[in-house]
Figure 1 (cartoon, rainbow over the protein chains, first blue to last red):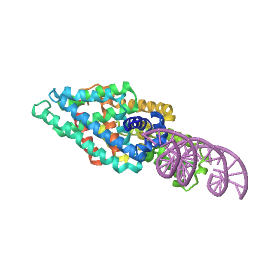
Figure 2 (cartoon, helix red, strand yellow):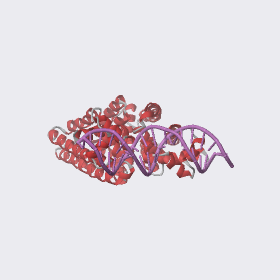
Figure 3 (tube, each protein chain N blue to C red):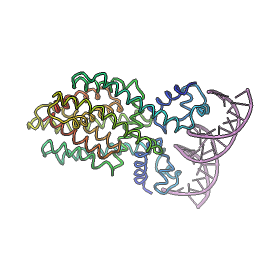
Length: 190
Length: 190
DNA sequence: GTCTATACGTTGATAGAC
DNA sequence: GTCTATCAACGTATAGAC
């Protein structure tokens, strides 16, 4: 049994049931091991959790970075719209995103400091990625009403909202709000 | 010991540590009882949790309703801005809001159906409250670019974002995003 | 209503055989 | 690396004295 598979199972369970709601027995069961055998791969439950968390932040950041570079040359409105769509499309098949949300919103209390440290670092880096594109948008006159920083911050409220709706689980409402939010947003900056 | 005080203690703990992360012993400890004594007041942990949940939805809806009626005659932009401020101001002294968020985002799995049922009902009712005010805003020409339903949905993305940022815990970032989001939003609808 | 005592499953974790 | 065996601690919940 590879550590990788164990971490995948843990990721899914942590995403669905949270840290406290997930037992080592459940994780072991998922990969066909006894819970005691997990200790050959990880020092403790916290060790397993933190490894999954660290990998998740790294993977999500790389994904954002790659997305930016792939679509950098497209018109600003296309880039932003696809960026929003990227969240909604991925979500339901991607426990990593749900794990990240859940852990960021409500970390296990005894790991609060470590989680928050990772999270703030992540937010800062992702904001910087978006800001790059908005600065280019300001130079090329793609948006006229708003400065890049305001546009970045306001755009990130749209992403927040998608996250909220995705967690809530109503697909129709997510769609409605995405459309409405985007319409008003683009109307407001361009 | 009144049931009311027990529910208050439970509310705070559920908000901070979640359902699974909170034990009856902790709740009892908080009010100076032994955990066994809680069973004189509640049939089970689930019973306690669901009572707190039901009360919370009722209280939060009444709060929204009262807020609407108090500020209904003010200009639309004032009403909306105060409404956003209402969230940020209350949050850090109000575990009920955090409890509601946490439970709505990530309900205990075995109570998922009951929580979601309450939640969707709540969302629908609160949306209807905001829609009332936006319809009046459209009639009185306070907003020109957008229909009331779109404005309502887009506004609720702003509220989502505040919730996200409040949970994340960074006050400065909440403030920045609130300002940016509001500026672009009002620019987009009025 | 609150307590002590108790039941009983499950938790995370360790030791040692294979 | 995986297993069986075992552990202490803690989880929810019940019974019965006061």
